[in-house]
Length: 208
Image (cartoon, rainbow, N blue to C red):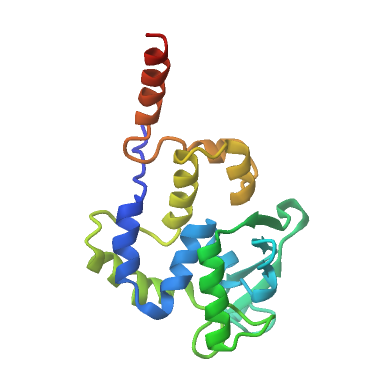
């Protein structure tokens, strides 16, 4: 039987985000707020954000390839989503929108510029971020299990379902092709089953 993977709790995330260097903090916060994949998030640009409707549209991804196999000679290639994985739009919370608006203004980021680039305005390399920023932060946070950047996507889905979101809307937000993929996040947080016991208590007590 496969061992259940552990999901980062909100309290553990708070410790982790506090250990992330300030210049990368909003990017990591965006992972937990959106549940985006790595390539989707580093491809994010201001034009993908509708501040009035409070929505984000995921319509591009960035993939890393070897220069040898790159048609342009660049390590990172921007790709629009193919037809079988269409762009998706979902709502965002106001505090995140406010933080991003301030980030755009303070860094002079243009509508078509990358929202979270390197200092050279190129896409951030996943491996460089992992070794130089992520792993030291995980260690410094005191979180006692190995957390990957991708695990923030898992945590996003788990938190939504634990908070009462329905499977179909979480599936669409995450861009899952099948609802079975979303279902595996239903009971990943500690104490998730307590909600069922509390519900039983409420129903039983209402008959007395």
